[in-house]
Structure formats: C-alpha cells, structure tokens
Image (cartoon, rainbow, N blue to C red; front, side, top):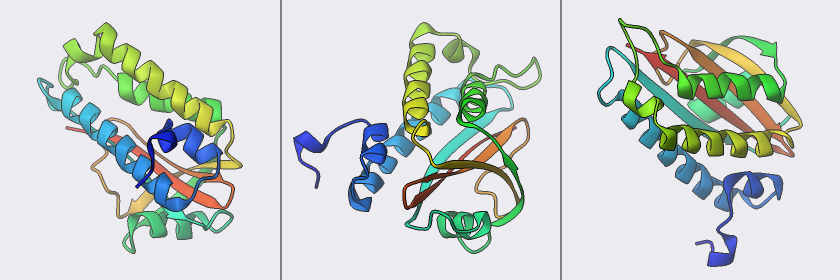
Length: 176
C-alpha cells in the first residue's frame, strides 16, 4: 500500500515512472472518479448516459495498437482503424465529451453540466490529462470494430497513450 508521501495526483505518478502497482491504484481512483461523473451525468438526463474508463495495458509500449487494445480490453476487442492525433486535439475531444449538452431529445443532466462546481471539476480533470499527455511518447486514436466496452451512439473516442515502456487505453462514449 502506498504511504502518505506516495499520494500524488495521477499525472505525477505516470510521468515519474513509478512502478505498475502504484499506477494501477491510481487508475482505480481515476476510474472511480470517471464512474462518479458518469452517474451524475446520467441522473436526471433524457435518453442519455456517458461512460469513461482508462486501462493500463502494461509494459508493451511500441507494440501494435491491436495488441495493446486486446491486452487492455480483452480478447474480443478488435481495432477497426487508427488515426493520428496530438495531445491538444485529444484534450479538446475529452473536454467536449464531459461537457456535451445534447439536444432536446437526448441530453445529460443539464443542471449538473451547467453548474460552476461541475465545470471546475472538469477543468481540473482536463488540466491533469493535459499534464500527463504532455509527457506521452505517442498518442494514437482508434475505433473498435468489435469488443467495445460501452455502447456508443452520440459521441465516442478511444486512444492508446504510450509513456515510457507503458501503454494505456482511454475510452469515452455516450449512448441513449
């Protein structure tokens, strides 16, 4: 278990190259935050839910996107294609996902996403992503042909992030 001196934000843990055990703990904490955001977005929504999750694929940076995604998501995951993306473009897409307002037929909890406290939480989360991604060796966008962990309808993004010897997968998606 990490000591009190080990309790730093997740971007520092990744960029400092700490061991996988400590990174996994922080991925669990971040994924808990993503799940909390998803629950709050979905509460009092209309035909809308959003999901966000990060996975550590392990020490396989430099391997094919297909191998990294399968390692992270499981044997049923099949990459349909890849595209180049820089960290600023990724940050923009992630932020838009967290702040997506929908329309009159389908939307998240509008009171929540319009609140100053939610916007401040998302701004801090985006700042953490930005600090982490600045140190990425490579970011690759991809889409899944099979094995998607969520059910994308309105928007969807998926990324492989390589940092040192580690590879990570981050997916965000929304549906009705």
